[in-house]
Image (cartoon, rainbow, N blue to C red; front, side):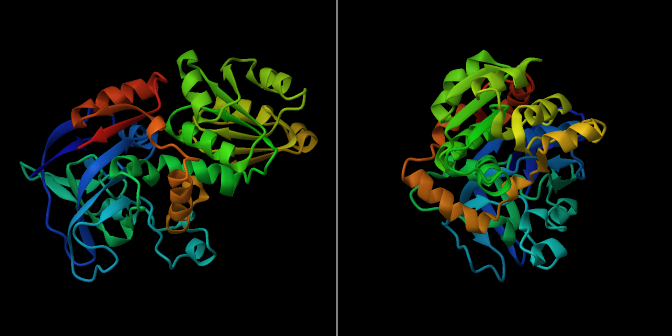
Length: 359
């Protein structure tokens, strides 16, 4: 038995309880978690914004040490440090075939599988394939990537979602060029990664926007040159800071219609907006036909940073080892499993950066 955070039903409180975890079968890996980040996507699963089979063990951003491998697994071995990949590509669908592995049609197929059982026999699913909110987990081999050398596993946990997403939003989706200006809406874990990635890309002005004045110091530490408290006049303030034009790029990390619209309005004519935040299907963003023509702006969705983890983790590791990207500064709270519900509350209240479950 191992301790885990279980979502018994959509909208129900998390339960920290013992689960019975099977040994790895063919093509599977058993891992002892070192740490798991508390991501907004976990909250979206718990409240039904994103739908997966329940009851489930949540958690998808994690790293740990291989305990055992099943038949046929050769790329990792017991004792290896690994990073979990919650969205593995199948390699065979249309999107994988054209190199868009972040849009793999079968990436979340594993969420329907039986993952574990509670002490009373209730069957549990792996929330986003990897069930990282647990002392140990068993995952498909393609959900495991070798951890980069020289990076502590507790820090490497953030690579599994926040960092890949934030880095990719800048480098793959928005494709920020040196000297361009960037505004980032929402300074949580992903927003902090976006700020650091924008700095690495050589952005000339990096504006952070959040509802909380308390996040300014953290945002500036991540690379922000300016900080704006979110309000109804935010786009006007962004234009004031950019000579009346607006930024070249906006990255929205909140997933709300108002902030998506504000991000779009904050860019210059011809500017580019990348939406990372996940909103509900009943939340609509509206534009009129004339403004779409007149402003010539682009609005783009962004899944997992449009990243290929196998390609991007080595590049990120180089930035981290060189001191250009700081993982530890993103973590504002280190907690145990039973601290996850409070971390969800802080997320809803807009407090802090990344909460990290440390085992």
